Image (cartoon, rainbow, N blue to C red):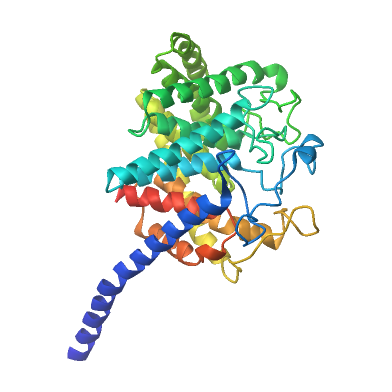
Length: 422
């Protein structure tokens, strides 16, 4: 009996001593992933993060990005899929979550000022994607760094969702000053005005491409959509209403009333459509996170207790789905070469095409982060210890100096969000 007790006491002591070391290791790796992201994936000229790396050489990391001529010819496709300009605005919203969370744990004014600088960079990137082209309010996926203005004509509701969600959260944070709030109000007003203009029965509720044509894949459709997509449109109107009503600009204040009307038109049916447990079980990781983000913003602004309670039900369903996805992502990581370097999309096997090994490597870390963020955005649940452990292990699987996938952005954001809640 004495031997058995000694054994268990030894195990407890080892766990007590080792667990903090693991936590520190994860913190250290996550901060290195943060630094690598800003150094290699972020382009200061456009204020945008891009999708992957094709070289480890300094300054050569993103030589694969499309040229203005290729974009003008819509090569290789209208969305810029595989090119590295695919998800810039999704990344913007994801990074804003991580930045605002890290600001909450900042120990010095210098650290907090650095987070304000980072958040402002994200704001500038969203502003560029929303205004650089011929149709202000259209949120382009990303902008060509070569000329600072070329964009692909196809976008998606995903880009709108994260961009708007991130800007709204910045607007209510203590980092945001009045000048930035006015910038955010102007951007959200442009987006909402364009939604009012394009998202109509005549267009089958499609927000349309930059050239005014319907989106060929239906991924910019904003209403009469699947349950996980139903809250996106009212979220955009709600965000525009809330920020514009806080603006000092009389015109934007007046416009906020229109956005409020649109918000109220869609909110109740959107909440009802979202509450579909069966449909939510099988959504993709990115769709799961976007549904949660939309509902979280609406929940924070909504005053109707019945609607809020129904939103909580849906968010808790997504919370439980995300728990399973975290475990699935870890299982799916077995045998993956995490130091994989991507090829230029112009060569055979290049880019990140669907149903290929490189797509799996690109997405696996992202799915872990998406699932963790989905749980962390649920206002009625605590982040489980099991989820933190799966997130920690996903971070520790990576070598920051040899990581080429933007999936790390989600791991960074989730880790910062979790630390801010502890």
